[in-house]
Image 1: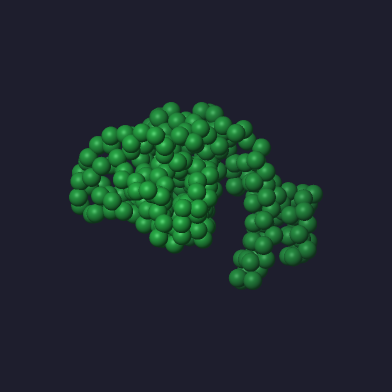
Image 2: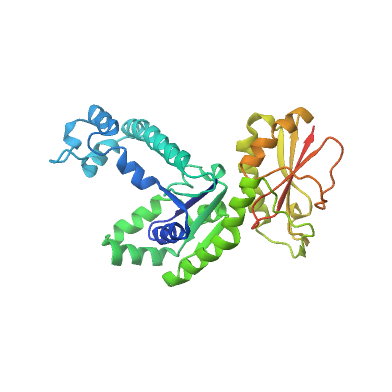
Length: 319
């Protein structure tokens, strides 16, 4: 199963991208839908909110009056903490249920508005950011959603910045133009990267080219390495004493083979072997057989990315 994190600022067109991915065959797990579902009438979530904030947060029909709840829950930090302590576990549990119910060969798209703000990117195999200029987003919110312009700008300002999102993006989808343009880009992404990535992940097959090209220095290499390191850190937990970007792409401004090299230092070969399945589960299966161009010493372990869109090698060595 391939897990894709999808996000973007308000008005960027995330829903258009999500719909297009579903049309291609993705399983959508929408955090906003889940957040409404877990506090629907008759749920334990709504009952807990009433106990915490009072029955005046209910509308006449017994459903949640969201403005009334917001007036109380966002009054201070303690109230906000209470709200989050009720809703977040319920959303997390329902999300886990939906993911577990998806087929083993699914491409699961998790639509999470606050993915960047909540630091969830390292838990995804790939993060897609839908990008649009602020003025474009404001115009869409005013014209198509009826949001007051001042309110639209305030909401945008309260979210992650464009720079923060772009730093998190494995794939940046430009949605400044016509809707059909971004849909065409999504279709290419599906066929050329997501489908083969899922297949490689399921088969535990690296996508690393045997003869990667030497290219001019890419200023994005450092950011790409940091995203990979964040995922590896989650998988390795406390077993790694160091995870670092090494090799030619770690040298700014120098041409190099277009492969991100990462070294994980562990206490010994037994620890390295214990990481084998965990790394494969997140998309970095072990490399066996044919040469990959990496120098591997006795006792070291080599893994490589299953993602055809970002060649990367991970060398595990004993410190």
